[in-house]
Length: 214
Image 1 (cartoon, one colour):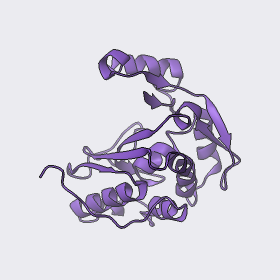
Image 2 (cartoon, one colour; image 1 turned 60 degrees about the vertical axis):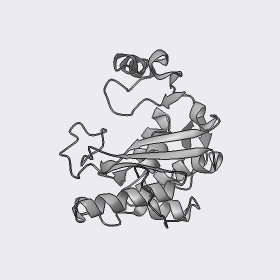
Image 3 (tube, helix red, strand yellow; image 1 turned 90 degrees about the horizontal axis):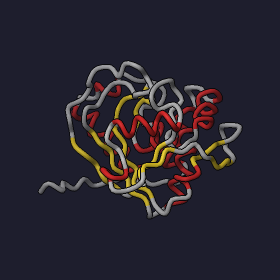
Image 4 (cartoon, one colour; image 1 turned 120 degrees about the vertical axis):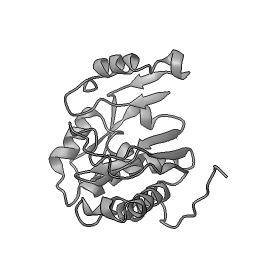
């Protein structure tokens, strides 16, 4: 099944019902995709080092495995949004997202985000695949009304079974393609999510790129 949770900000995806209708209008149905489209706000509550509690999406956490499809882009709080943010924020219920924003500060936002993602990464272990899409890379996330300008050339799509590797390679490629201009738009410690993921034992940052087009 294809899965998501309602978003925190106002719009066409801020309730289960509105999100279901938005998905249908955009052509995402069981008939077109070939599997159920599940939008759910059911939760599992777990303890957190940084927040009063974490509220994970129950149906996502109870799946048999995951393919995490993420559009890489800039983000004002976490510097960039990729697989970690997709799981760490998108894997929370709407109330969980509210808690994340209310109880974090810029100094610990990335660590709290990574902690939330770590519950999914460790639960699924080898039954998880990460796909980062490095196309139409904007300055801002879609949680901001104005996505901002395109800030990097189209690079391609990265696939890995390790969340640290796919994030590190994505950031490196975008930085290289922009002569480090991408990172200069955001706060210091550009790779804070990656460092946090390593601290949580989610992987190592060494990687080798293989071109599947050849």
